[in-house]
Length: 532
Image (cartoon, rainbow, N blue to C red):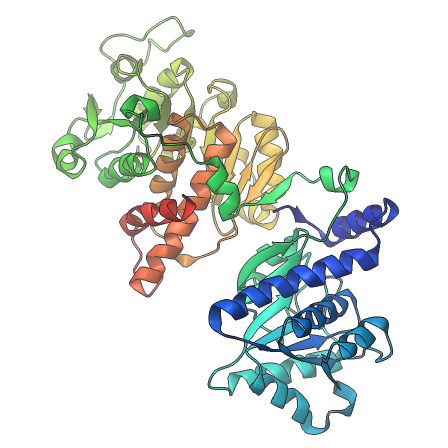
């Protein structure tokens, strides 16, 4: 699903019209796609009565086309007109197929509106479109407020479908009027609008689906959009094939450097996540004291035990920093111990739970230039990188970097507030500058590629606001890298699966408050099964 601004969408439609697909045709295609999705819901749930809130703009037109299609399909339909002239062609056609119409200006005490809402299984919100700016006009705010009140008083309110966007949402900024009607499903036309994936608007969107409006091929304005929204179909197509003839070598070997006395569980979560996503073998390199505590919890792993200082990885040969890829560090160093075991690995993860000790930082600086396989750097690994001059030039490219806003601030020197206010642009800017894939974590995680592509993960949930969930994400991404996915695809698929696993875990537990990182890990298999 492409992600566009309102201005970009207008330009796309204008170019499509100039190249032979008229605005009227696009509206017919949009309305039919909307109707087909509503009809499918009806067949699934036994619904056959719908009311549409029909505004004066294109969303109202889409709604009328959909209502006419549903009327011809056997639904009982009601159109509630708001500031829309009753003599337009779409209304004439709708009436000719048996549709029922009422106008808000003639609806004393909102009797028709109340009756329609109480009778209907589905309410299609086509009042306000993508071009609105807040604050709402008084009349619009009052009507939306009435609808919210009526539905809140109903024992079984209708299923609410928003056309393109919930009425009251600014589709660029993500602002939302207090009176905005919360949708169960938002059906957006051709592409997702930026504001729908921002708060507070996202709280009103519900499930999000896109319908085709019949755009012609070779539209410059369309093909110049490199921002996407991850969805189930996209990620399903990225997943590695698993044939009956496969063996553990088919799915790669992950090598993980993680953990410290302060963060023992980080290595466990990352390693298990790499296995759970399908890697054939996982080797965990941890400070030696951690082995006894961890080994019984992941018997599938192999181990490399690293020299340590009070439970933190040490480097006893800090003077013997690697000068180039052919020179090994001193055999007494932790870097040498890791490199001796890297020959079979197909992907490498460093960072979860390493801690901030200077000796560990020296170890990271020694090791990084010699790792010449696909790499993921997470958590404390990123903080140690930030202390290395030209660190991004020393990573095997393209690496996948997985910072949260605080870590991104350390890497870039930008304030967290600035990063959060322009997440997509900043992730894209630094991905290109560093020549690595950046996964900027948080609500609506951004995955940015050095070639200018970006993908938004359409999930914002407190279920993932828990220590250890980032370790799970890093393990998922490196597990996919080990199986042969390129850096960008592995990051997109891993971030999507991680987000959906958070939602699955919260649904299973009945609350987001109780979700632990291990619950997210346990839910990964549920997500993968949905992708197959």
